[in-house]
Image (cartoon, rainbow, N blue to C red; front, side, top):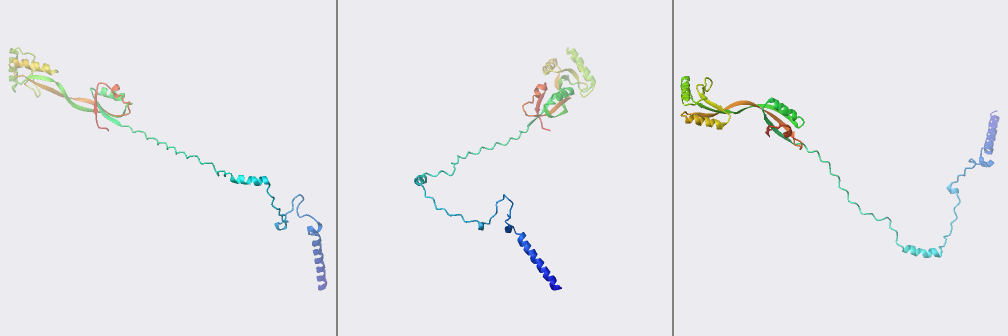
Length: 249
């Protein structure tokens, strides 16, 4: 039984191999391995060797032209390089803006605070900084001509009667203050007038004296800081006062 089964399997195997050999190979039935219209591929080893051709002899004309060609100077490989241009100088860096310089001045003295305030308003667009200040100053109040009274009220009155007898008028006896019991002969703004009065009294026989009277009065100043840019026309805006340099603030 086993041998029969083995025999049947061998026969079936032989039939299958024979069918594959008949039906499975393209070259057996002449069928192409590629589609129609596509060239067939060949290995390099399968390509036939190209027949070697003998060198073609050069024609006489070509032979004659060869020496001339060889004798001709060869063309330069490249055109001569033009002369290199000098590099243009680099542009100068922009200069930084010049810093402003400033002038510091004291304007004045102003007679009143109102005059000082008006000047400050007029210089609002001109000055970088401003400050106002008040100072006390001593100024001449006039020239005084007088006679010392002798230290007592009675002596001063007696001196006055003597002046009247000598036809020297315009006098009075000072009754209080530091100069009490002094005979005043006049207060003058002009020193020349004061000297004439003193000479008149001296000529009448009295030792008249002349002294300067002073008083302390306030004066007003405006300190300004102005940029020196050529446009500071403060003199056209503030008139009637002087100026001098002062420390900047």
